[in-house]
Image (tube, rainbow, N blue to C red; front, side):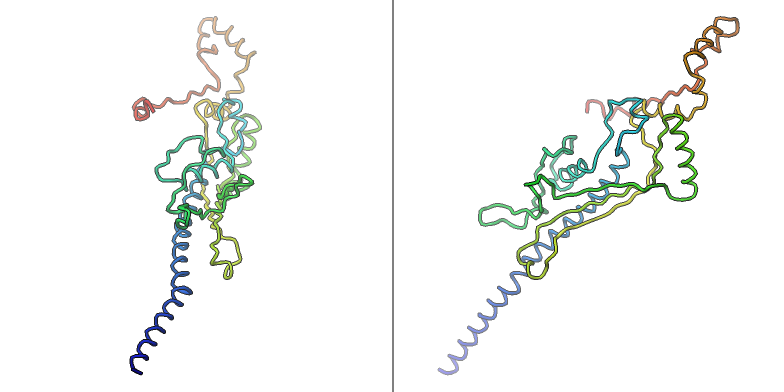
Length: 285
C-alpha cells in the first residue's frame, strides 16, 4: 500500500510540473515564435519597400522642373513621400491578388492586407488582430517613407559638371539633376505583444535604408526631352523673330532658298519616334 501511494504521488508531481512548465515556458515560447515569424516576414517586406521607394524617386520628381513647365505643364511627374507611403501600403503589404493602379497612392484607397503577415492569430470573436500600429485617429499609416537626395554628386568630375550644367540651366531650360545618390528610408511600426511589456519597454518597429546611384537624366515625354536638349544647342540663339524675317526675305533671292527658316532651322531638335513593333505589346491595354 505504501509503494502504491508513493507511485501515485510521483505521477501527480510530474503532472503538476508539466502544467507549470507549460504555462510559464512552453505557451509563452509558442506565442513568441508566432510573433518572431511575423516580425521576420514584415522585415523582408520593409526591405522590398525601401527598394521600391528608392527606385520611384529616380523616375518621379520632387518638384516640377523649369523645362517641364515650359514644355508641357499639364504632365504631372511629381510624387511626394506620402504618396509613395500609401503605394507601399497598398502594393507591398496588401494581399498578393491586389491589382496595381494609380489611385493606390491616395489616402482613400485601402487594399486588403496580407493576413499571413498582418495578423497575430484569430481571437475569441473570430477577428484577426493586426500587428501594424496604425494611428487611425490621426489618419496616419503604419508605414512612413522618407526620401532624399545627396546635395551634390560624387567625385571631382561631378563638381565640374555641376557648375557647367548650372550655367546651362540659367541660359536655357537644361535642368539636369546631378545631386547624386537617391536615398530612401522606410519605417514600419508594429504593435508590441502584451507578454513583452515586462521585458521590453521600447516601441516595436523596423527601419531599412536603401541608396542608389542613378543617372540624373529624366524626361517626361518627347516634348520635355526636346525642350531640354534645345538648351544645349548653341545655334538656338539664332532662332528669333527678327532674324527669321530677314532670312525669309533672303530666301526669295536666287540661290537663297536654303537660307530660309523653312530649310535652315537653327536649334532644331526632333525626338525619334518609337517603332510600332515595340509598341504592339501594349495595344489595347
